[in-house]
Length: 550
Image (cartoon, rainbow, N blue to C red):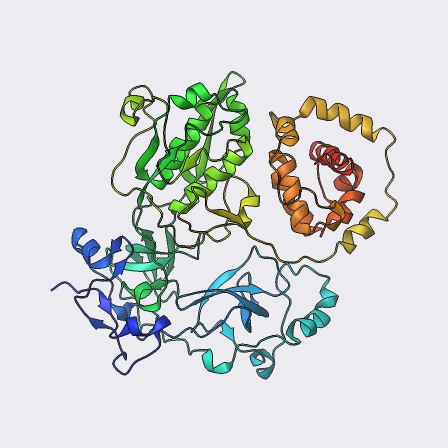
């Protein structure tokens, strides 16, 4: 007899797994767990699959309750330096998991832990056991300021009470997993997501977790007692969100919208009204390739893209050669929209794509007709993306622009592009860089002339037009001397897409707006390690900023 989906009696009456008298263990049940458009019972029958038994996992038989609150402080092991115990703040909650941020670090290294993880403890546990709290790896201030920073951080803070911590469950006696078993697993590239997965291989104490519908781009090996894998039905029991397996999506084209200065409107009119339904990575490839094919200069569109890994390939022809580039692997339907929104913003063709059909007033080819001459646009089948984007897309790395790491996607039924910028953490002052500025670096007498001549020869395709006519950003109208480090990084990315990879240097050196205005090209080369080209380009944009031309 095939095991049914695990259930937990009365779980729907108890948010985040608060226990009831009959909720002492998982039991086999025929109940259907409805997870949006995805149903585990139906999926198991369709795939003739078996869920991994509960005893295979290092998870509590009764899911632990989550009574933590945003802004609570606790002690946590630094995931990038596991010998250090640090102060962490709860910045997010989902199901039985906490999103944590180490105090003194930035918002780029948040991590997730279960409420019954042994890696989180109440404040005071480290000292009680003879240890000392340490600054996190990448502490943004001088190491000598750590003791005072710690005092200020804990003064008046809300400490997570001991009673809401849970004891970590014991490990299984050995590896009980078998190839082909189904489970739920954290996507380690996007750890805010838990997705349906399959045991692809078993090797000693390790298992290969393969994500259903994603062709290996997100697979990983882990120990059988990893806390990142869960029994089928876990998300339903804890209130966490389970992402459907490899859902096919459809993106619609707005032919009546503005195509901007880089896309040929006549060519856009010849495109199909939509791309998909198909796998998210294929739809992304089709949409991006369409933008390249419709460009007046393919090199311009190509320059806004950065090499990804694991995704589909796009191509462009310029400088008498064909150039190819891998897009990033995408396992989220929301990420397709986020990527395209960023690309279209750079192309100044906002609202070109959406997740709902646009009202069309022009005759155009159907997707099938277009495929006769463009076989890269292949229609798929199944699910069409609607207004069911119900969860935020947390910051994570992509190949469009590192600035998009701070963009959250929020659901809405009124907008085709439900994107809102998220606010970065307050950053420290740039005293270190101001000291750098006062070290008496010699100023080259011909610097401005050299810079201007270099810029004329090396201007990025389309970058000047983009600079002159850029849509108003959150920096517009603000005094540059009041900018934070995050604002400076945004300025660098927006000034020229080719400078994007250097933006992190400004965080490393804690360069805020005041320090930015003091920088010169020779200083950037000597103290920041920049080469002549990027240094001169940055100096050019800083000069324009001083002249109020940003």
